[in-house]
Amino acid sequence: MPLLAYIIILPVIAAALCLMFKRAAAALAFVMSVDALFMAFSLFTGGRQELPLLSLQAYPLNSGIYLVAALIVLLTVLYSLKFIGRHERLGEYYGYLMLALAATAGALFAEEFLMFFLFWGVMGLALYLLIGIGGKKAAGAAQKTLIILGGSDLLMVAGAGLVWIMTGRMEMGGTLLAVNNPLALAAFLLLLAGAFAKAGVMPFHSWIPAAAEGAPTPVMALLPAALDKLVGVYLIVRISLDIFLITPGGTASLILLAVGSFTIIAAVLGALLQHDLKKLLSFHAISQVGYMVVGIGTGLPVGVAGAIFHMFNNALYKSALFFCSGSVERQTGTTEMKKLGGLGQKMPLTFAAALIASLSISGVPPFNGFVSKWLIYQGIIEGGQANQLWIIWLMAAMLGSAFTLASFVKLLHATFLGQGAELTAKAREVEWPMWLPPIILAALCVIFGVFAYQLPLRYLILPAFARFIIPGIWDPGLATSMLGVGLALGLLIYLLGNVRSVTQRPAFYGGEILPEETIKVTGDDFYDTVKRIRPLEQIFKIAERKVFDLYEVSRVVVGGAAKIASRIEEKIWPMF
Image 1 (spheres, rainbow, N blue to C red):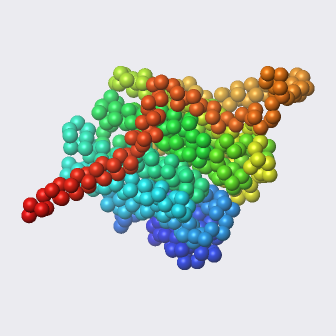
Image 2: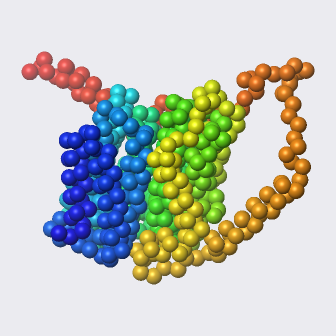
Image 3: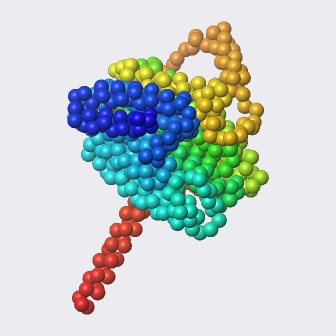
């Protein structure tokens, strides 16, 4: 039997066994995850493979995505051994994880729409079930997720139907359609709706912050942060490269650039104002996908390569950040930042992983996030010849990076730095199954940044392009060396100086010494003044009324339509 068949069938069998044997579910899931990673590596190094019976095909790009997905599933299972513990629904939890793994593989390797929709739907169902593991507080979020993803899937099916009408084919590729007529534009937008919803692009994003409030943290680290992004963005890439012809400056390109830029800015502004650790990360999960959409929207190899690279990078640092937030929650019982502080000394490994992941997502060199954003910037600039609005997209991307760094300064200060709090007084580092996964992911963030051209670009991304030359003069190795020299000089100056002989005095105001609790700076409210900036004040007020939440708007529209229909029926029915 071909390896592609084992990659899908074995996790399904493991899922069934986990559901039947609750006590052995964790061990079964761990063994299956290790096996899946080995199979993923064999598939990635084995070249192009096919399974015609199920219309599946593996090539460097999708097998590389599956390799990263399998790694994160394994780390999630390892992390869950301590985080989930002896949950009453343990068998269901690990069973649904294995089901998500199988569905991810099927969706990535499917070459026909019908087979793709089957696995895509199973993946959405697994997400719904995993969010529901959170209990009553997650029930509403699970329902919201199911409705948004289910509704967008119906739109995607309609889009595939239009592609079939225009081409007579159900394959996901082979015929490039120009978006130059209403029918092609409608098909393009309908297919994008499904991909946008899974990836969390605005306005299909609201299920992610809702899920962050109630879903178990490992679920957020695996699906919205990693698997859904990988598969959702992969679908956008396929729509834009294999099904439709995206030309720089064309209608499809402008749509992607505009939606991506709006998602970057709107979501990162929302993140700035969050007071809960997981909700802040959920808004960044939305904002980062905007960069990927912008990169694809350039229609140029350098921009698309940057988008794909950013997709891999996002899966690494975002999963690491959610793992770190789960560790903080496990040790303190809360993710409210105003109740945290001073955890850097008590949880040094978690802090180190969170620091590296924060710098990576913020686009700080020499970490991986900078390199992928650099490529996206290059794509925007290179596309400026065909698109006069290029400066707007570039400003949105760069401003988004600045705001991202600002919000993670807030996160790091409020959680790991600053003064301690009552809930953090007895905190200590988590057990190794919980600190090892984020440390591994943080190490990959460094490796993917310092050796970007030698490893991820060379083996994961560039094989998808027949001929591609990376523009620009960025040299990660040289930059890393220079940064290292600068840090060493700074450390030397510190050691030679008299910095450690600092005298501390109690704070006083108006001649009176202030109690320590009144002068504590939590960092939680660093950017609350953003709400009072006049151009933004009204926008935030509108957002608070959930005007930008497609789910809430749809519910109001459907409810209003139902009331109107009921009143019409009351008036007309007596006439008969």
